[in-house]
Image 1 (spheres, rainbow, N blue to C red):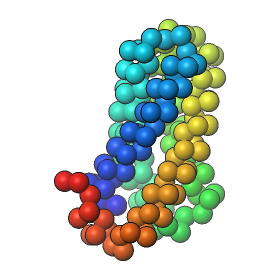
Image 2 (cartoon, one colour; image 1 turned 135 degrees about the vertical axis):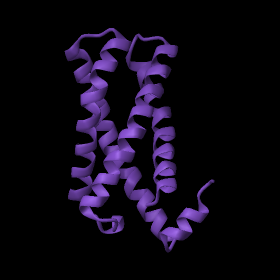
Image 3 (tube, rainbow, N blue to C red; image 1 turned 60 degrees about the vertical axis):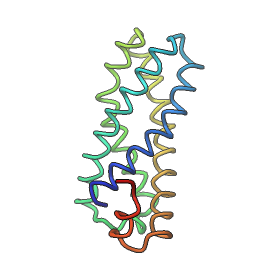
Length: 146
């Protein structure tokens, strides 16, 4: 994937995720809608930056043939990404939600489980659609918004 496609991939992932996260946070916390939305957007921005760096490194180590990645590799990819996110997001969530470590940790584990499943499904679908509709990376690059 080139830089433009990586950015498109990440923004699409986060836009879909924001709908889920804001809805769930509004239902499961007493935090106001403004705090929840601000936190969700902040976490989304952090995730997009981490997503770009993490996937760039992952592709360099494991190669660019994304369509042939096994379920085990996709699961490992998702776990690695989420562990990095926990390290960064836990203190931010504690501060914004004004909750103790263990409460936020349990909430974060729930978020990690959701995002682990979501990331695997999203990336697998993205890779299959990319392979089906775009036969080369040049075609993908030309088809994406500029």
